[in-house]
Length: 486
Ligand code: ACM
Ligand code: ZN
Image (cartoon, rainbow, N blue to C red; front, side, top):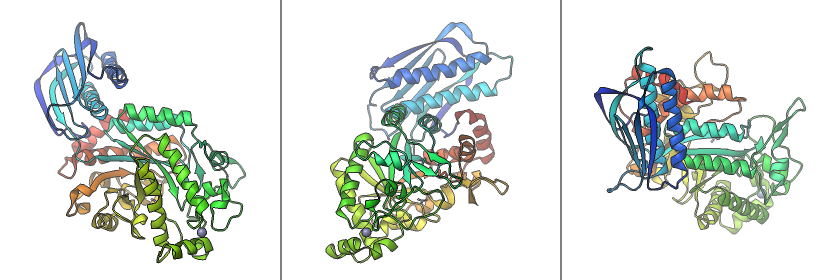
């Protein structure tokens, strides 16, 4: 299975799969997760019985038991028993229950795939105790450069939970488009979500609040936390297109129709910008129920700030030595505001450049991420690994691959990912890792799936089980068997 369970006992004896299933919910039976999971499992069982003869007279009792374990377990822990006539799924969290169900489904599927055509459906008895090594098992999706609608996002969440990922980083705003309905600042979606392409055509779209909420519900049922990212103060041309007065030197702005970095960024000197951002992030904080909000912070050129009287005054008033320190001041101001709303801020590793306190969580992305991880660690910040040279899933997959960024990241490179070089004196600060999916070059679902699918399997395995020996041949055989997940 992928990721491989930490502890699995498989008995030699197999038993014939029954034709009838009866679900039982223990405690938490009112939670919508249980009937939903039951229907997923039932679909999988029906899938098996479509291809194989099952005994229509016997039945299987399937017990979904969602309640606390008597002793302390790691987050995401679950147990699964598969025995004749009786399947038991035990977990104390919705995430754990999802993992139990997914392990069961993989077991059913693998054994269906392994059986010859005219045998009965036989299933090996198993007993599983399982938990993840890393708590941050993330996938990112950029919906600004190319827009992927809410139905696709739900499918993406299904791919994720199939491999036991638990953090969805939703990159909702960038220079090329704003993607979120805002009640407080409606020009963001009215103006900021459409760009004029070089041939004159319009490209864009955004999610309505209803659609966002339906995605959030989908995620909750799968034990996935959604982390919204509003990238500031750089990568903000879509915001400036809607509210140009927030720039150092206002003029008419448009969402960009080329890739690259804009010199125009939000002005950190104007009180108006700070008020705008506080209100905007309040709206985001109220909409998204999770602990984390990502405020970007990457690739913000400082030329405008150097020339801007408002920014220079802010620096003088606060004794800030340079423009990097001004960015750190901005991050701190917003982090303090968001903390009052119960949220923890995440930023790309540039937020370390101007000197910040240890509260924000850092995503180490530049280069191989080792220097950034070290910097975050030494400053006492928790950090997540998203290194450009290793976990940028928009890279080309091999030499002949024509779609993607210019660098090549082989599937096997991802399987070779090692946490060791990012682990320092205090290993608790390393939360986990994440695959980043930027979409400058990924214009449609087919291309995106091709880039992402072969890399999600090995990353899932590494995140769940950490470093260690893997039989490479077995791994890829298993990944191709389980390809249905994506
Ligand atoms: C990034 O790739 N600009 C975080
Ligand atoms: Zn300014």
